[in-house]
Length: 111
Image (cartoon, rainbow, N blue to C red; front, side, top):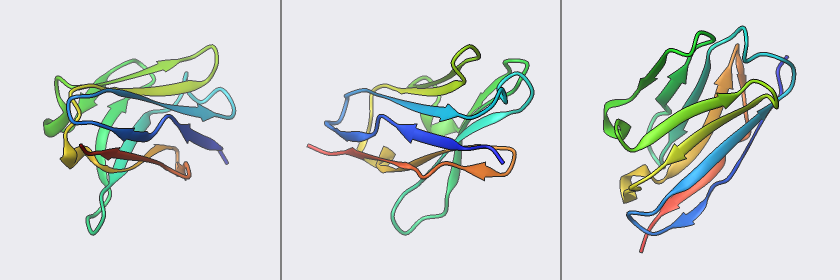
């Protein structure tokens, strides 16, 4: 089972930026798809961004042009760069791969 540990969340003002990291055990990046999800209070968990082992990237429509998913295959870390943050981006963000979830990191966008 893969262990995933997110970090980088916090409180930021609207228009600000944060970079989330997800450290993974094992060399999963070369083989498996990695994803970022988020869950806002009272809402279902939703897929935010995907990066395949071949580097194909997809985004949920509301984050296109603002969020960037990337990965570092040498230190087994997945990233989510979030710019131009909006209050509606407030949620717990999770990384996911091959059936395993991280513990989540809280992102709060508020003035």
